[in-house]
Length: 148
Image (cartoon, rainbow, N blue to C red; front, side, top):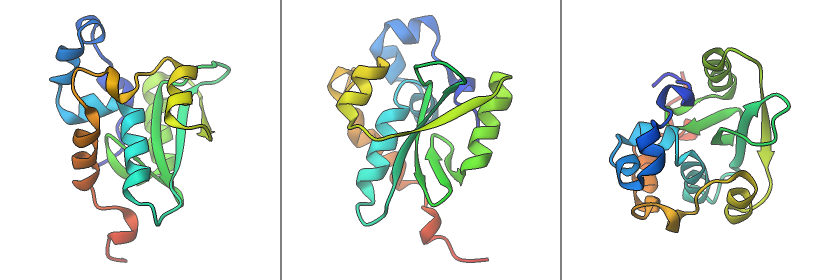
């Protein structure tokens, strides 16, 4: 699947105010906007033998980020599956119509959520962790794909 901008799936006002409505969106929309950080941490935890980092992207000069994803050796994993990180960044910058900056996240999930006003897993309508694990499992990682 080609890299798609997270902003294309931004939550509506009702999805932002009602956790059940947000939960009922399709998986891609749910993990593009509203639970991308959960997906990134679950991806990292799913492959403990790989050095997977968590990265976030935001508007240049802004303190808060708007999209979080996992990174392994130049590959990014988010709601679009695995894509080269430059393609993911380009898709988001094009959608936003302005330059973006990426930031490696070196804190744990709880601190990230507190710093960036994101929800912890227990703050969702239902537990997003099993849903995120299933979503990660549907996407073959780059190291498991046959060489061309």
